[in-house]
Length: 429
RNA sequence: GCGGUAGUGGCGAAGUGGUUAACGCACCGGAUUGUGGCUCCGGCACGCGUGGGUUCGAUUCCCACCUACCGCCCCA
Image (cartoon, rainbow, N blue to C red):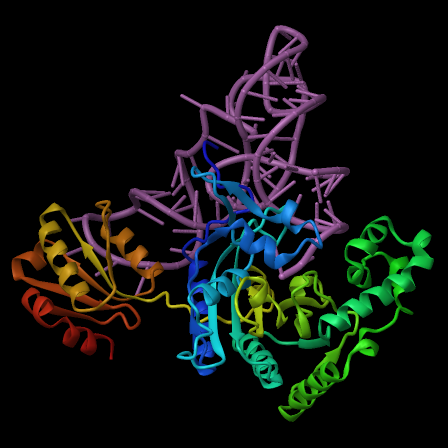
C-alpha cells in the first residue's frame, strides 16, 4: 500500500456519510427547539487554551494532546474537545456583554483530536457534538440541558438509556473532600494497586472508579462527597433532583462518579447505554456538567457554564448495534439508457434537461449493452428508465419505462426538454 | 507510553519452504442482433501489509517497521 491514512483516522465513505448527515441534522433540529445556536471555532488553538483549562492533574497535557510547533514557532494544539475553544471564543468576543441575552447558548459539532492508541470507538481524529450555556447558575439550566441530551439520544433511536447524576459541590467542597479521601486511603496505601498509588496524590478522586477489584473493595467504604457539600451546593443539587422528578425523568445518583478535570463543579451527569455494542454493559454515551470557574480561568468574567459532549463514533456504533432504522434515500428518479454512438448527443442533452428540472438522473458512460444498463438501473432503484436508440432518434421520441410496473410509453424529446415534470408525474403516478 | 492478537484479490476466506495461490460473494462479458430476476458458461491476485535477512528457492522461517483489533494508562 503506497499511502494509507494517518494512524487513528477514518475515511467516511458514501453509504456511511449519510448516517453522519442524519445524526447532524437531527441534532440541529433538537438544538433549535431549545434555542441553542451554532458556534464554529478553530480546529486548532494555542496550546495554553487547553493546558490552562485542563489543569495539570493528569498526563493529558503531556501525553494525550496532539500538539506541535508551527513554522512561526507557535505552540499549537489540535483541539481535543470542544469546551475550551468555545469558552475562549466566548471571552474573546465578549459574549458576556450586556447586549447578549443570558444565558448564551451555543452548540458545535466537528472533529476533535487526541494523541491516543486507537481502539474501536477511540480514534485520534474523532467527532463530537456538544453544547454550552453561559451566564446562568440556575438549576433549570442544568435540568433543561440534561433533558435536551436525553431527548437528543431518544431522537437518535437509542433505547435502554440510564441517566446518572452526581454533584461535586463548589471549590471548597472539592478541596475538603479531596483531603478526606486522601486521609481515608492513606492507611490502605500498601493494598492499593500500582495505578491507584500513583493516583492517590495526583488525582485521588480517580481512585473511586479504579478498575482494580481490590481497589473497588477499599473504595466501598470511602467517604461520600455528598457529606461534604455546603448549604448552597446541597440546595442546588436538591433543586436539580426535584426538577428532574417534576419532568418525570428517571435518574440514579452515583456519588462515586467523578470528572478527571478540575474545572467541573456542582452537577455532573452521564447518560449510559447498555447496548449490545458494549456487550450489554453500561457505557457512557454522553457526559457533561457545570463548570463555574472555567470562564474566569481563561481570562473572562466570573461567568458560570454548563455543557455536555457526545461522541459521534460511539453513537453510531450503538445505532448500528441496536439496528436503528435510518431514513436512507437511495432512490434514483431516472436512468437513461443510450444505445449506440449515434445516441450520445441526445443522451447528453436529455439527461442534463432532466437534471435541470430537479430530478436525479444517472446514465452509462462505458458503452455497455442495453441489458447491462438495465441491470444497473435496477440496482440503483431507478423509478423510470428512458431508452434512446436508433429508432427513437428517428422518431425524435424516447421510450420510457416505469420500472415498478413495467409499463412503457413513448415521449417526445421536446417534451422531455420542456416539461419533464409532467412526464415523470404521469409515468410514476 | 505498556502488554497481547492479527495483516492473502473490491469483500469474506483456504493454503504450502519449491512447477499454474482453493472456494464463496461482488463485478465484467456471453448464452438469437436493443430491456431488469433465476440458471448455465467464461473472465477477474506477475501476487500473499512494507523493508531487510536466512535459504539453491519464501506468501510460508527470522528481524524491524507500518496498520488494525483487544486490554492497561488517560479519558476533556
